[in-house]
Image (tube, rainbow, N blue to C red; front, side, top):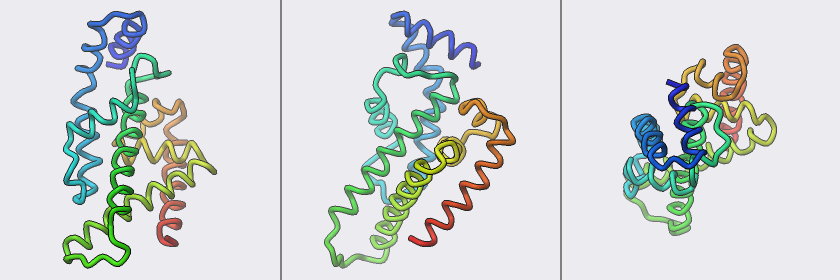
Length: 181
């Protein structure tokens, strides 16, 4: 399947208009699944649906044929990163709109806390990316994109053992950062 993806990607880069539609069709179901994963983590996101998230992240990415992609898994990870940005930006906008001393119903308070947790995780992941960029990439692949160990290894061009080690180290580091926040 990666061979089909890479062949279509090359055809897109060569300017074949039909190839871009074929490439989108090849990965659309996986991208919808990733978008659902992002939205499932945030009940408070009631103004975004799966298709809206997918399309807004696509607009942020621009033309996939122009991205330096190495594999299908790499595209899924890049797209997932764009989706995470959309969700986190949405959460930050929602948190900024809240009154400094909000009077919230219990359910609203829980939804507000979810938005705060999403932004705290995003901030911690950015901090991790500054000190251990590969570990942050592993978290994006595994947690946000839902890639397997082998797909993550392929997307990052490292061994599965390295992915396992980075995944364990990153989870420990993030847990400590989030507990402190």
